[in-house]
Length: 341
Image 1 (cartoon, rainbow, N blue to C red):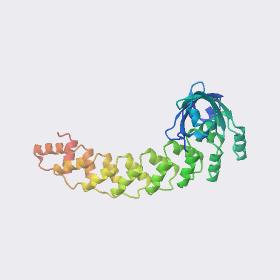
Image 2: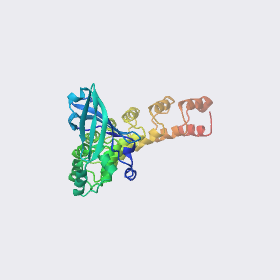
Image 3: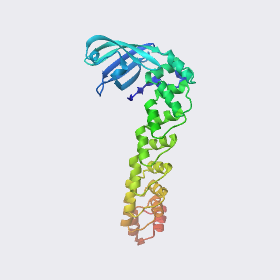
Image 4: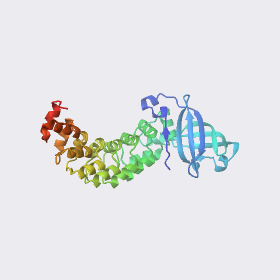
């Protein structure tokens, strides 16, 4: 089961800095009942500055030696272990009404380091091993990366994956959706930008498969999602490239804008025409205002030019009131440029 891991403060430090940090020998633990049956919410605090790690939906079975009966106790002392591949937290404390607290002692696992060596990975620093313990990074993640033919990570890269939430399930899930990236840094970047398996699956369903890590990050950052893609498709703009989708989104051209422009009689085949018109403030309300002033069937280029020169319905009416009859659009623009008002 996936943990929602939030590693705060120093746990996000760079490998250079993390190598210099002293590993805490212990700390405090807090447990609250989980939202789902058979799970708990676990918080661990450590270090002089009170750094913390938080896990939700931790299966009770992963707390070795702790039972549901223990949690229902009232003040009785409990002993249990949180066993991870990289190390173990030996916990002692008490419970009252399903909530517990106490202290833990951290023990690194030397066999983990030896197994990394067998896989061609350098020995982690003490701090890196502690980070991997806290995030639950194990040999199964290392083996999955090898199976998917990723570049062999260093211990520092494994620790970085750990602190950024790149776990075994994440790697498996995106791999199952056709994404076998070459390096761990791409995984970290995708995870940091919210590219999760559900988002990838939604893009796959919309017809956008086999994107690069940078493309996935780019569309996520710019708010290009299946709903936006579908709105463009409904308006007649299908099978657009990633760059076109991003540009349309960035410039505020969505399905509603396109539909409104179509209703006004403007449906350019080139999406760049829509972007340019949106950027210049040409929208249905502006088009209607010029039609009401007697200027119909203008091209998008003419509409953009009029908008850029500040031509409005009110200005046109004032021009007519000065005895100009119905001047051409070019004449209205010249009068506007000369300051007639």
